Image 1 (cartoon, helix red, strand yellow):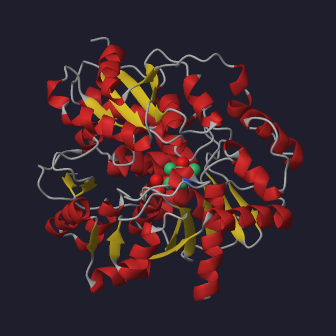
Image 2 (cartoon, helix red, strand yellow; image 1 turned 45 degrees about the vertical axis):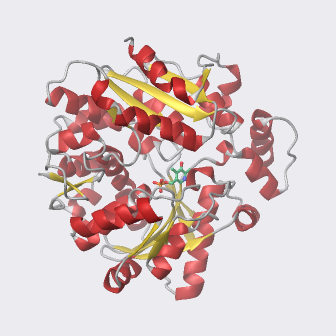
Length: 482
Ligand SMILES: *Cc1c(COP(=O)(O)O)cnc(C)c1O
């Protein structure tokens, strides 16, 4: 199976190389030239780990021993064998993606990516270490650190904005153990950290070691996420909510468009998915795009209570545009317009296909808080602000379209990662620091704090570096030991 770039100006590579490279040389994203043939009904009969192995093997045929990689990624790391359980809440089914080691949905992919990278590295006969660079606004950093901890042949540097992440998120990162993990706070905001990382990538040729990426531009991070769409469908079959072949809608709290694109891939592989509902927060670029066909990033980024969705350029939308048009030259033009002018407009036929497959809406902080409060009061179910956006937009969708098919709302983070916003929404006491607020939330709701978060205050702080953006390259070199 060949992987090609969405911009069509890089040579095709095999799946192992696509995982190693992260980004194609022409700046595009890798996709298989043809989506794999897939026995989707057979997949539904499997256990979650077998489902994952089948999906990965279909997309990454050049990576050997996939079942073993999947077992070592997930066994003992998730708090349930189900990996991603579903819970019926009111009229919806909530798909809980936060039972991994860092209580964020990114764990599903970041437990696997390091193993895929290591296997790809071995497959290509590389012997030196690979350096994985990650700039984070909070969640990705910890999930990547936990996933890459002590994985042989790989070093990882995570950069987060000094004073720009929550207390809980900072504690998660600075207490991370592991011989190969390196963490620094950057004097600046998230953009400064991200720009610093991009500059290091741009000067890659002068470095004596290869770089890779842990974010969802990497196909090795996207493919593991297809699993839970299958798992959710299977749960609905098991509970007799649906019969085989019935279509199910999914509402997805969206930032970089990776999670929802995995749902689209599941549909393309045969899974009976109805509408994919793209839920944004007040940063509603995708809502405008899906309604008008114009993607316009020329607006200020708003800070919200759902920080993992605070994003104006959703990288994986580029993959969707390629999948829908098959026209790399056109995608290349749109992306050039986006970077030069700040916007592009797709043609009417392309917009119509997007609207057939997707529906988009947005939910500001106030509506998210109301939703958290309402869901808690009516169903005694606690959701985090990202999940609340998914819930609220799913309700808007049903109100506007009358589509009554079963609705699965993806829950992307534990409410205990955002205790302040959640307490505020359910009328709890906001006193004390983030750790105290987690305890208050637990007492109030009767739900235990996830173990990985509960023990944070007791762990030693290992990574206290605070550096200037200009010193990031030195930090990376020192971390690599040269
Ligand atoms: C990353 C993240 C999202 C957005 O996922 P994308 O794949 O970037 O669209 C939503 N919620 C949480 C909690 C996240 O960490």
